[in-house]
Structures are given as C-alpha cells and as structure tokens.
Length: 133
Image (cartoon, rainbow, N blue to C red):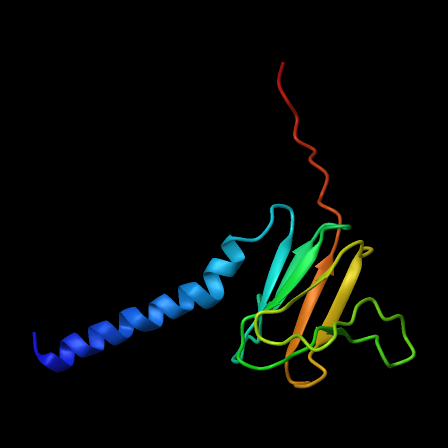
C-alpha cells in the first residue's frame, strides 16, 4: 500500500468519525419519547427534512452546524397561526416544541430561508388485527 493510499484511508476514517460525532451520535443519545431533528450546514439542512410524529410528541431540533439558525413555522409573520418559532440557535444549542395538534407544519430558517423542513403530526392508524382464540 502506497503512502497516498494510506493517507486517503486515514482521511476517510477521519471524515466518518466526524459524521458519527456530529449527526448520528446526537440522534442516538436523545431522550426516550422525543423526536429529534439535526440542523446541518448542507442539504438536507434539517435532518430528517420531513418527520411524522403522534400528537403531543415532543420534537427537538439540535444545531450541529457551524453557524446560527432558527426553526420558524411558516405561519409566523404571515397573519396565520404561529405554531412555533425559536430564537437564534447557535452551534450546539437546541429548541423543543410539544403539544402540537394534528396537521402539517412546514418550517424554515429565518436567517437562511432556503433551509426548509416539514413536520407531520398525525394519530397512529388503529390496529384492526384479529386475534384467534
């Protein structure tokens, strides 16, 4: 194996380590019963970009990017109902919301309007399975 091949292998391992540290680890260490969305500096910006949760389920956004962002419901500032709006979330900060009624909540970053996400709040489908006796 050449020196260049070894250096590329080390670089790949380094990049994978950062991905685990910045994206996957915060999701896996979250509180039970809390849905988590991570803010990133690259697409999809909000990861996941679309999420479905049951009514009342707490949702937390974590800013794992290198710059401030917001989480702002599209209804805010448009004369519509403002379901949630964070302050500026600096790197490492989080924002939580709970108690949302069923519906679809599109949201964006006030600082970077191209950053968009969607939260679907809906009741789980009833289980109509039949149990044999």
